[in-house]
Image 1: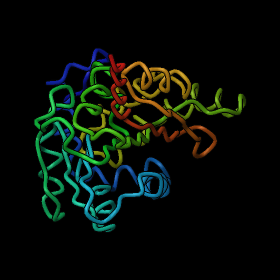
Image 2: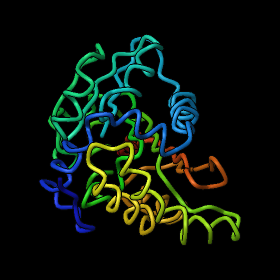
Image 3: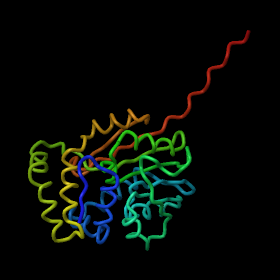
Length: 239
């Protein structure tokens, strides 16, 4: 069994998720007490995929969320660096692509929207990944990120950081096919930027209209943003 380090070496991250692919969806539901379903539903609502649109679901894992987005009538593709995760979702009938988030195999301006749920913190260059997401999104297109964050109520934040995160590897021993991986996941959650810091990274990567709102007291946050449209060229003065 393998786990990645906090340097988030892409090969190690891929191997780690290959190791947790078996039973991954069940493990998520157990570890989150079923809240993962609510968080996915909020992501679906905020993304607001529409018939005829093209949606990229990045770090899609077994494509659970991709199927939900596709119910809108949009054409949705699941992309993930872990082939094992994609194989784990082979029974879900949406297109799937093995892809590196830092070098996406799509043309510029290919998608109306791009989304990533609980995956961006596993990329070893957050800003580069956000820039790649912008590259493949059409001008005026949107991005939605659902990710763990920092609880806003201080007493709960202390309990969350000191105790709840440390419980994850212990619980994983009973429900995961690769329990050692959850030591990394707990560490990556504890060191991940808070809501405002992530918003600043999104802006730094070139997105605009960046906003967020908290779910479950800030334990999870949804960030959304828009890719800027080209500014109209100024007319040259008449001689």
